[in-house]
Length: 284
Image (cartoon, rainbow, N blue to C red; front, side, top):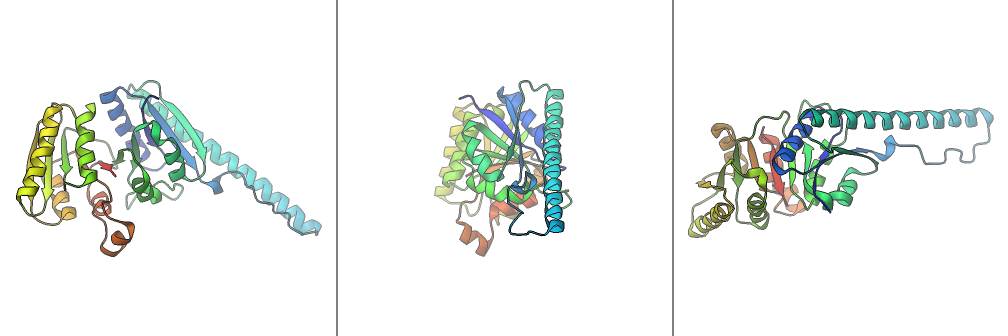
């Protein structure tokens, strides 16, 4: 089964950026793009039986009218979904991406992604911004659920696309960080880009060795990378480095701790998504 870029579009202000990031990946990997829009179950046709035991004619007529309105709303939501996909396909084709396919589904977006992610090289999704219009979309509210469940790399698109030349890799020596290094080494997306591997914490022989091994892995793949050890807390030190040094993308492992621990002490992943204004590639 050939791999593809799966781009999730919801009609929000991030949809254009999702398309642009998907086009960038497709251009560097020569893989097709599939656009996915998922209608929530309540956006689809009403399946419950409203008749109940009501026998009064006036009430029955009212229920019939409500059922008709439900059907009309479901039809409109279907038409809106197709329009979102058509607009997204047009944007990709204008970026010279060929063979774009679309998929309109009903149901839970996380379950839908889980069903098709074995076809994905990478999943592209928009980041929910404070000023973004998500009144009619549910993609942003499910971002963490997708990140926690996906087994393929997830690119969280920033609000607007900009050319990507400098990539920062957050490395803590853990399993997901090692997967991120392996992904970079195997992917043509990162060839020719400036890559910098950074560990936030205290310098030690173990930390230095881990950085050297990661650097050697990338060097063997033809990617020259610098390494740095930064003091401080990851969510603040990394965000500051991204901003001050002008990095265009951050790559890191996602959710290295349990959900319960994250609820108690917070999550570096969530903090980085909120703080960084650049796209993030996350590996779980």
